[in-house]
Image (cartoon, rainbow, N blue to C red; front, top):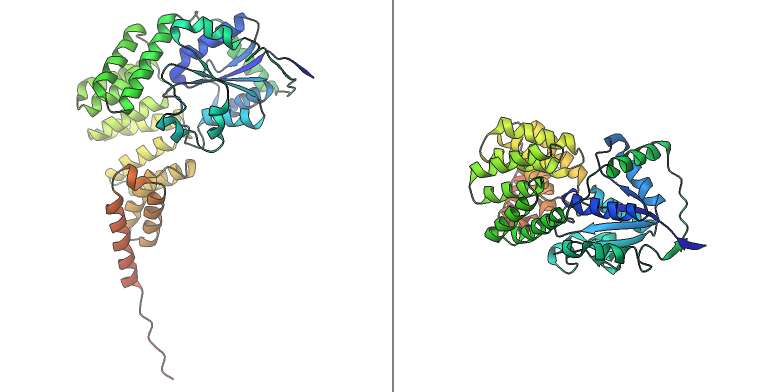
Length: 384
């Protein structure tokens, strides 16, 4: 029988933490039972806790921003998996859109593949920082969270129940989110869009404004590091990366970005440390494995590099870059057949277009096939 259900799961990217916490605080204060991944869940329990909470709650509130879908093309990305689970179990999905998010943008269309292609069909709510309370009133209305739904009865395990209560307790102790913190996220997301469009001066301005509003917004420092690296201001880039790590030492992406930066400067020992830390924090991230493989490849540790490229492919078979590097490594080992396979797979996945080396790789494949032909012994006809 249909009734008003008050159980909610909040799905979000860590970049948008303050927005997610503000939504949690508003709903909790208005009598909703909300699960919010506030602090780190032990890796061994993470999948079970997240999945059981998505399934056992009637509503699935999804916070979307220009940067939120960046990694959704990866099969092991947890935001993607949460959304797909909510779709599979037909939960009441409500997207909340931070300023700048657009279902029609090229980046969004590219990210929403497979089941996620249907995400734009759900009724969404814009949540501008300036009118956040109005947006929350709308969210709690009978059009969204307060409309009758079929009862959801899905038992959760003892472990999930315990960790869920721990998350709630920690969330309830947090200070109320300030409007400045929500506005800082909006400035960050504007900067992200400018960054993606290679308008680096405007991106710099937006990230700087975000930090003025929230000096603890580590993601803004991370992106400043990336931006200063592009502008070849290496001193400022390193300062920004180190500040990001100081503010949040548990985000694998920051270590990975800093590792790439150090690798580019040929500071290989430091770079390896950063890449290994990234893998430790997020063992399922294919990019971190690829980055470490690239470093080891450069310093002639080929066997280790090969293992890491293969791991990166196992984690994300649609990630083109490892195929190219693995092909190069196998070519050096004179394993031409395997090299050809990996180069061809790289081109199939669009790597040649993305990295602008289509013709070079096609030529390599052609040359390797000629070498293979020459290597094959000519069979002599038997005398009768």
